[in-house]
Amino acid sequence: MSLEKRRAFKALAFAMAAALLAACGGGDKGSPARNATLVGAKGTTTVNRYLWAASLETLDFLPVLRADPISGLLLTDWYSNPETPNERFKVSVYILDTALRADALRVSVFRQERDARGEWVEASVNPATGREIENSILTRARQLRLNQLDK
Image (cartoon, rainbow, N blue to C red; front, top):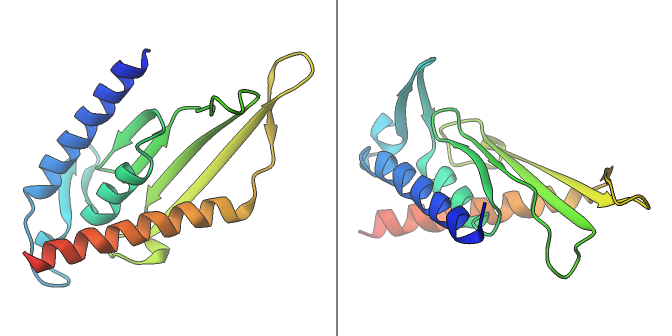
């Protein structure tokens, strides 16, 4: 898939998620309207709209493989930085709660390197990498929430 098509897909996925989340409106803490309540085939699932939007924004440079605002799951496809073509990454984000808290978010980072035969093999990831992405998402989610409260 070309870079333009991937960007268009990401923009479409983000727009759809943003439209669903924006329809939920604001409200006070604990109010279902404060979060995106979505109904899916498996029942009702509530996802914190700020964490969801912040996750999409923070990882917008990665190609999205699956974005499911109902379950709070965001999976990216493999990405290789052109400056390091023998290494690639992908990220999984799980939004676990309706609250805007650090324990409501889990980020997993996967890394592969090319071996001598040119095949991709699993490689270790610095544990701080996942935490840094989580912190970036949480910081952006808080900014989004503050911007909403200011309006």
